[in-house]
Image (tube, rainbow, N blue to C red):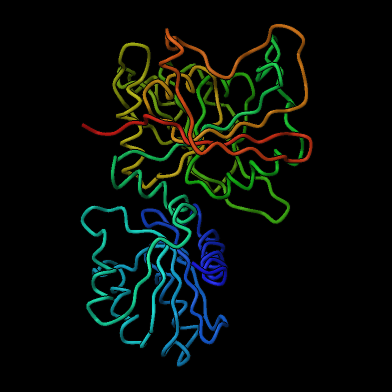
Length: 370
């Protein structure tokens, strides 16, 4: 793989990132057309029902697509959906070579787009910046293979492992640059999830606040006991985003009426030992095209989600601060008994964000359907 090949695929990745949080149930995809070493067209998939990235790139290139190389982050589709097959458009345009970042994770589709192009005499090179391209489509892949959303647990903690003081004060552990990064992530996910304790303690709006705007994702409150007030900001604060209250199906219509009157969407799931049926809840969220979920609190919900195998990635901001005594930890609930059973992370990455250190990694042994 040449540096030039990587550079053009990186450009395709950067284009695809513009669609993050906006393409469900489709994955974000970027494409770049290159001729004689120069980019002659590019595009990304903006939302479901709109043309795919390859089509925008072909339109931008026009006649220059003839004999050009196409760099695309995901294997081109070869089936008729809400839009036509991209493979047909690529063949008709006379593209010479196609460089693919990742294979389509859908078992019913995987490899067929590549086979179609090769069958038409087009050279196809696969797995260009594969890790980066698979990261882009991780929420889509989780939904099509497991039927649940891809969940990122985000939190901030002090050097002595506390996410709040004993009184519950947590503003602010992380620095302004870290908080801005979180708002950028909110702009890219399909939904934000919190537990009832976070709503009671912080009364958050769960909106995206960026200098240049941004979109608000769907707000999800997990509250099996209806402990949260229907007057909480997450229910009443004006936003284009919907708020979903996930609670027990044992509640009566009278119990739920104040939330419905506030315009909240109610999702009912069964109560199991220890709380709500989390797997059933996440399956229902995935069916609503909420494939990329940012879990922002709290410790009880985070612990339960981790033990259920429903957290895919950890995003932890560590601030250079010490509480100097007892505070509140990242996760609560009954953890593992033996260190050998601890939840391990892979592909751990650490980087500085102003004064903080951001730790990120993929959680091993996540949920897989039987």
